[in-house]
Length: 350
Image 1 (tube, rainbow, N blue to C red):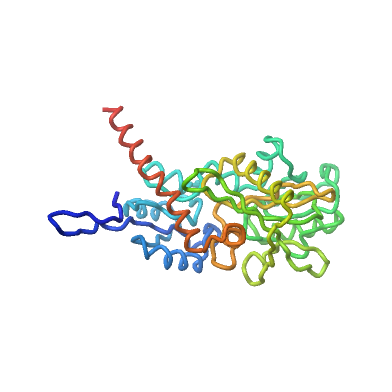
Image 2 (cartoon, one colour):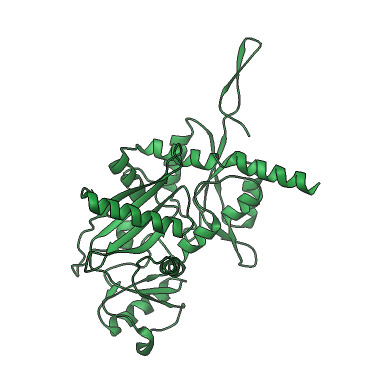
């Protein structure tokens, strides 16, 4: 593994090659968790300190090509791809098996984050609050006798992020509107559908970032202040999350509320088995009680747009470039341990 440092030898200075960082994303929008804009920004920032490349991973063959490059670190922008039989291959598991370090969480945490119903059940099992919900398989209609939820309800795809499928019809107040929204989602998205009780309170997002020196997780809350839609509801729709509209945010200045948000977010982060960095979204019910909504373990890192970098700037004064360098260093810190573990395994099997 190359280390970017100067080596003095025979009264001359030779520079070792920079560490290789490979940005990993997909040209398949259904797979990629990193936009081209975000990718370009990351390359621009990191290339000042590292040798940076971009790998577009759409299938198992692309994964093998990535592994052949033997980067010091893969900067993750895609969670999984499918093999020729349609089976899911988690990129983090693939990389770890080949001794390649990567940014962010393991496949186990990513799988929980990917399926909103699984993450909600994990939160419930941990004794934390989340709205009551029902999971409908793709094509499955809602049944009045099995609903057991109280209107209003919030409807969204279970395995998609970025506000996919969320619009001014996502909050429903009766069974007829519920059926219409489910039919609309089934016609557009290849996903199960999550039906959960709608919470009318304030909405927050907490960025979580590990301190590379202390090893402690830092929570950085912001309040989301989306404009009201045609129905008077304030939700983070596809239009807002896709960046075609800007979502106003605000610092959380009330110390008691701020502490409560941080404690709650860190409990959720740890319950999901996440590591290094991510974003936890939550909302208050009518009584002001915080409830988990969803997690994003590969959040948008676009400067001035993504809620994760906004939270870092608002809470820590952490500039965008330093935020990216910290994420990289957290991943690289596992590199030597990964290579040592593989070496030790080989020794034990000889």
